Image 1 (cartoon, rainbow, N blue to C red):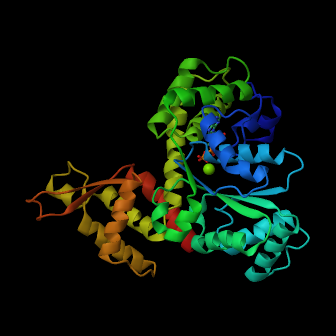
Image 2: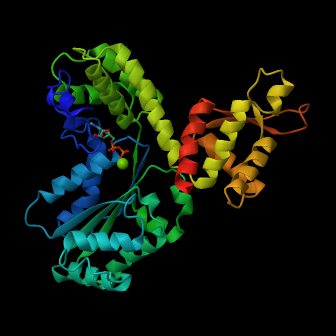
Image 3: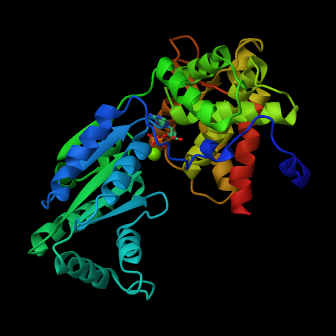
Length: 397
Ligand SMILES: Nc1ncnc2c1ncn2[C@@H]1O[C@H](COP(=O)(O)OP(=O)(O)O)[C@@H](O)[C@H]1O
Ligand SMILES: [Mg+2]
């Protein structure tokens, strides 16, 4: 966008801020129950007792972060209570040390910034809690990103037996269902004192959410109900993700603005659904671990030229043999001086890619070289391969 565009007043956007991913709406629709459950978990702290730990789980865009932040803000506004609350984004603060350091920095800025070791930080933390029998609540968002999570949970729960007054309670938030499996049973039972599950939004709910946002963010009569319904239905199909529905809405506004239109029509909404879907695929791919990227890259390259199976079926089918993908992956890994993983790992990778919806596969019956797995890429191979080229070779250079 040029400076000139920025200076010309928008015909569409009244307030761009409300479309930012960091915007926290004042009104969180359809989440009264969830909010009151979070409040209940925090309530003891407000009365001077240690609260129960809470684990919040739900798919991306189901409103977990917004609801927890909403309750934290409420609690911060209650005067005269010895509670302290830290909200931590574990994508950024992803280890026990970083988190302790962040807690200290946020609450004791004069002490921090001097490169203390973990033991010093812990001591300081404990004394800080004890000094006025503080009740400390820490919300760990995207908690599954923490590398030494068992250690962290152990440390934070140990505080409660190391101190004579005050207390610490945790709110863990995650969108990874497999997260439970990697936790030590002891951490698991500490964290799961209470559990709260966020369901994905239905189409009608997404409609109300984006209508609300359109009302405060766009000028009047910019978007009609039919277009809003279309956006809500598209996002409902993608798993009921409110973030996705807002992304479509925002992009539709931007497209209409670029075209200098007076309103957002269904055309722009349809185009935006495609753009938003591409964004999601891009995000999905760029966060894959390295070897998964290499396997997917091999699949995309082979799909571009067509595998052996395509030759066998006279070019009609685009399935690849699992074996040919594996040998391509091996030579690709070797060519960039990475040790290829074993076939056992490779099969694991295939099922992960399939779970993410990036490929589909099926076991062939007898006839085609006995039993073998056939693989098909779910998105245009050219698109996937060019994203991965940047990801793999861009990073390795
Ligand atoms: N109930 C709701 N009402 C209004 N906006 C919502 C609601 N739930 C989610 N949103 C919006 O959707 C986006 C994603 O919500 P978020 O809380 O980040 O989800 P999660 O943490 O579960 O991924 C945010 O921009 C938020 O403003
Ligand atoms: Mg979140």
